[in-house]
Image (spheres, rainbow, N blue to C red):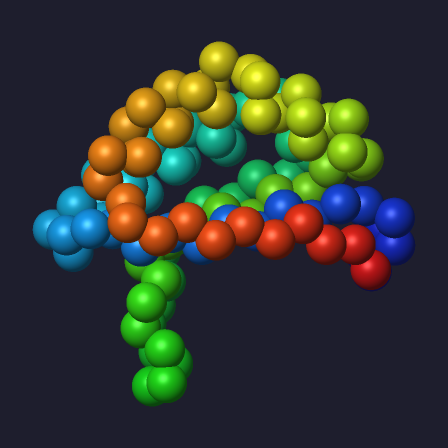
Length: 99
């Protein structure tokens, strides 16, 4: 069972052009090496939901607290990922949750 006080950071991305989904995925996969997250997983959407087809790639990360998330966002790997992905995406939706 997950730790009840952990911060979960979930971000959804859509590529401007479906031909760039692999490049978006590769750019986001850089985040898996960021040492400030306890867990990071980057996955392509399987597009199995018949009611929603907007999302191409999902980033899921877990942090011990907001300070760890802040450190993650200033790490050079985070900026490297942004530099690759931002020009290729037209949608980014993020949610930070605990439970």
